[in-house]
Image (cartoon, rainbow, N blue to C red; front, side):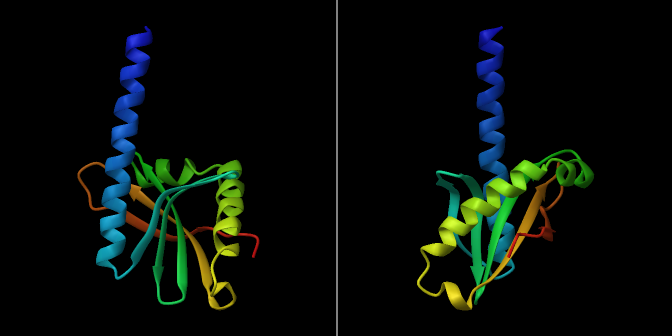
Length: 125
């Protein structure tokens, strides 16, 4: 039983890394620069931070079977965690005052190019 759990976790971890890599690639092809992957703060983790001009994206990556499953996988608690971590990251940026912020999601679906969902949720700001 323990073996299966460890193996399952390892497989999920690899799937998550692969999903984030594909999501980052999709965003780079849209002209975004990836500033951070798996950015950890005391308030939580942000899967990807990307920037194009003065627009900064805080991106949650979800690997699911369908787009609907991916959208439903972002819980209210996840939104608050991402917002808190984003606030910390933003507070350390010298050009904070001129940045626009958006909370997006990239859904990594089987046998499809990743789907970039803009404004997957709205932050407090």
